[in-house]
Length: 239
Length: 175
Image (cartoon, rainbow over all chains, first blue to last red):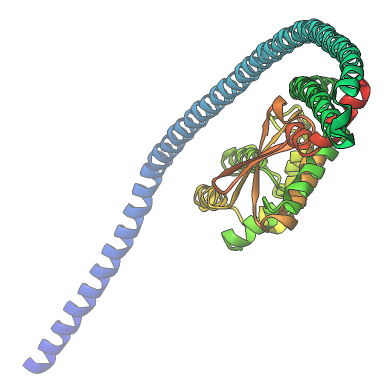
């Protein structure tokens, strides 16, 4: 009897505990739903505010980056423009300086050429005068000598008739040697003057040709001459 | 693509040291715009280079066309990570190439420079880079420095060479 009573009591306690547990579970669920309903807008508000703040920071950062990039591009463009203007100014100065130098060189060359031409004319006249003078002197000397020789020959013929043909031949040969020596000295002088003229003439021709070639040849002509010079260098073994 | 291969492609239509540096610097400027400008959306670099007009940057149309001729394979081998290093390596490699300093009497057009460069590659050394200078005393030919020697093949050389004939002419004129 006691066993049955205890069993019933235990069963009733167990059922009571189960019912109590179920009630607690239902209450917990109801409370959680209620808390969620109360706190959800708060969470959403916090998240939304954080998202807005993050977007604002990102937007500001992008704006700053764009501003920096735009400023850098502007500075690069300004610097490029400045460099271009500087280069153009320098190029103009360089061209002006080249033109001035070319004009000065041309004038100097022209003056040099005129001076040289005058010197050359003077030298040529001096040379001609000297040559004519020497030739006249030689001719006079020859004529005088011939006269003397003729006179002396007649006297010699008369005085040394007994010396024979051999002696006359020796005298004639001696006189011919004298004439030949005088002629050689004249030729040597003429050749020396010609060498001096040749030397200066070569330099002058070269300088004049350079100035004329620079001014008259086209770019194609210059390029062809450069290539021909390289071919010449290769043929000469310089390459 | 290796730097050596890129350099060989560049040298096909680049014959002077000045052209080399100007074109590589221009290309670097294009790459910097493409790789670091967020507004750049074009990925075809050859098209980007071709889109530049002559007065956009300090290069001419000849330089622009020469870069386009290098091909998409060369241009696409650069990216934002390897660009600086590759440019530096290319310049070092170019500095190590044989140097041929050519003095000419006037400024020559890119067409003539290319012709002279091709001649030097064929007759002097296969990978030589010209260093073009303007010197009016080289009129009638040229002057060049190669190795450790300076050679004068200007009009002065030809006058010295033909001096006897010239003297005969002068003498004939004088007589």
